[in-house]
Length: 243
Image (cartoon, rainbow, N blue to C red; front, top):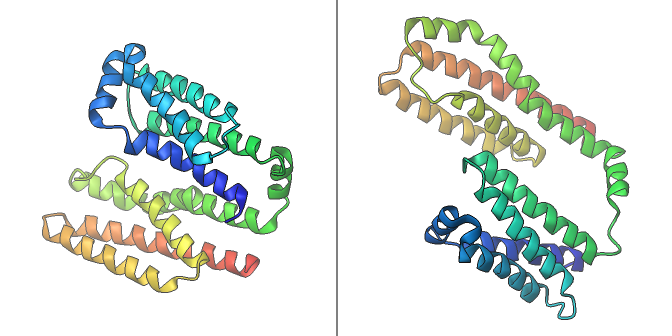
């Protein structure tokens, strides 16, 4: 394995072991209750540095483990002082930890491309830009188009009966659905798209038997087919342009 890749895996593994394997619900509850007075907060941060040191096996390099320990402590302390512990806070917390790990990886790889050089390289890479644009298109504009195209049916259903579903669930499902379809197309797994269609058809059949109206089922089916069709078109165009 390439040494730079190995270092990245070692840093990530140390973080995963610290935050998800060696941290129980009881210790998390202790940190949330005591915050800066929690002994486990200090132990948890120290453990992050120790595991980083042991996995890197760079026995004369103490700077990275120390930085990991200190930053892990303050990032976790920031999270503990937030009023809510929701998905947004969790993702931001993990993003900050990963940012530290990326900085550590860059420090341990002097030959690595600088950040400005990396941005320049990516911004002039046609394949990267086309694929990035494709994912952004299926996530945002395509969802907007589907929402506008099916608005009158949604209003018709809402007029007949309140939608019996989670708030914004359809939009989130659609986003993941289109990302998955585009990924399958770009990785040349067209057969799996048929499996996805079949799986969703089974789910909709189950919904129709549980008392949902025929209109709502037809509305979801229209949105699904539009989502699939537009994602396949975008994916096919990317394959023509890039592959």
